[in-house]
Image (tube, rainbow, N blue to C red; front, side, top):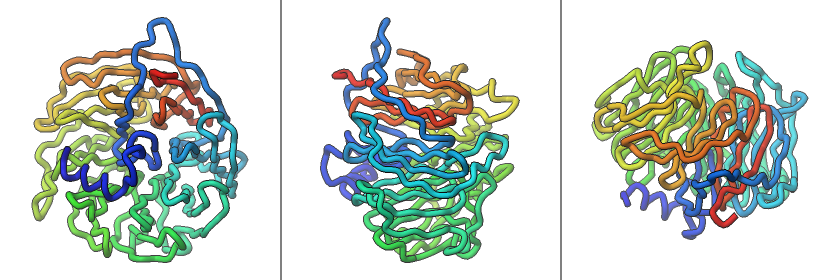
Length: 409
């Protein structure tokens, strides 16, 4: 267990059970797309997972988060976004929060982008148009609201705000893209500004904690990587990684004192040494161009999906690479521009056409364990969520399916 993990554990986890039974943020408890929960059933033979419940939540790309037996996502219908709070076991809707928001399609169907975040019995929600809400997690009552454009002079990126807010104790951190403070830190209780810093335009990834003491915030914006001091927001280090259309969307991945990043549109991947005063790349490769899907890792091996939307999407591939050298260990087509999470040593992959696959995270060979069609449609770019034996899958059209996939189900 690394010092980074130990620091994160004591900073954010009040009990050991949280680690295995919550998914309160985009990408899970540590925003790294990893669940350490035991009991995922990987052997199905002629059987298939039982559908526990289904809902239609509207158009969009918000993933599913869960805390204290409640699950949340947002979707768009009739030029309005709705945040749904649902009982995780029954699928019953507990409450909804609806507000005006355009569908805003741009070369895709449009809809909601950002994933809500949960902390301290509150849920925080941002729209692609810049509306920010803090709600009571159990009732949906509004605690406070802001707008990133009018309150913080924000500059909305081309495809709208997509990053999920970062909660650290009572601090709420998110991008505005403002040239006079592109990253802001707010008091999570009342929305008051604590600090603002930076001048880069907002990207599409989500802010994340970084460093041995997790006293820093790492942002992957249109400039590239920017490291801020958590206490006052001051910029510590920067590394330029610019792409066509400003699309840096896949989450950076911390590897001790290094950061692995990847983008599409010919930019590719790089392993950055952030231990130096001026960060430098240790290796770069255009063979691993991840447009949207974040990657996961076990030890020195990373798994992700290379490819980009458009005419070349059929060339997308699932890959395994050695982070130390940038060498590809294996690759496999057939998942399109899908998404990947890791449940212990199993890759859980949702293809862009709605097939759910379980693949053993084996650096030596591709080893598929199970595959089942779960969702319909295309452009399903939303990663699944796995909590307490329940696998939550959500399509871009808004079909939310909860499957029983634990060994005790």
